[in-house]
Image (tube, rainbow, N blue to C red; front, side, top):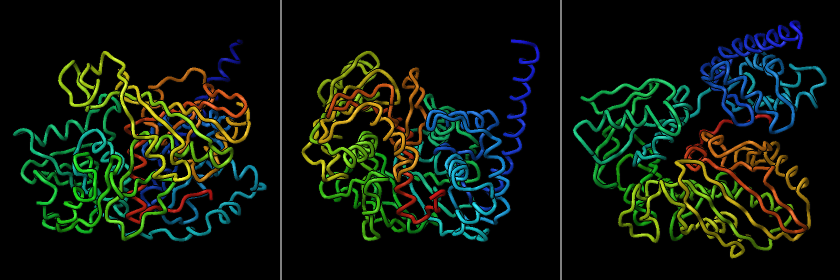
Length: 479
């Protein structure tokens, strides 16, 4: 490498840094003034740093084999600001790709055609919807982070309260601390203040009432100015209609979402698959499990193209709070043994639960699980017998296409790196990530490896359900 090559390389980098830095205030203006959320293949760009923006662009090569340049997206961002857009969700990577194929060099004309339904609608607001988190554990706190991040001007999901049992005299400060710091997901991106007198937490300007209660039926939410609220039950204590209906006895509560598999006739919703089945008459729905959310989109994609005769799902799952840190009594088989020291074979209902979201696969899948000594990110191994023969490249190319261009692009992600390990998927917003390098195919038998952040990715799926129920989902582009 010559001195000239070295300096040219550094100059190229500083140029990209400067361009990314210039993008940040424009992305912020689109978000705050227009309610336009921008992303790159599902990776949000709002409130991101220069390096984070560059990494998001660099990531694009794992999806479509080409690194996305900030010089491709910067002109898009500038042009979007001139269109007086109303609320929208815009994936810049997909938009840039579509422009390259169809734009014919006319950026303004392309954008006006592609975004016609939201052009000139700046200032329009949707009717926001109140949300209450009943329980504030791992999933509850991640839901809070996501909703605060997406709060915008308050016309989407409005996190109004959390309901917990009081655990100590300094309970409020401890709750705030757990929201502020997370050993797996890192620090909260913003500021959190505490008002002990009024029992509130304020996170990035969102005032959240902390309500102490011992049961779900004893709260008058209207006393806190909360109305027509969706109650998100994160406790897992009640999983059937009778138990969860207790929430609906509370003034100010109108619907319930359970963040666990529902029992009985409750609808188990996997967003992207059967969320359209939710009606205004549905007072209680389940968001199923993290594993069900991870595998159902991939199973649907495979079944639609190749047909699934039968198969087995093996889940390699991070340990959870349900297990013991050291050996102690546990009502479940094997789960009493130390989670931090053992791989633990246990049951999973995910294979059976698939049929609630995809009835055509009813009775075709078996399943089991192994809990392993990691705190987050799990893997599902799908061992499937297909109706049609195929090969590894065809399956991988098909799943890459589904991750890029299908209606399941928010659920299915794709990686073809030979070096990725579980921690690389912490914070993934997709339900599952297909590991293409691990795919095995032999005639009509295929084995797929699907990573998933069983905490954050699942929480994103729950928020998508909430946005649909609240009717606050902005239109997504490109179509």
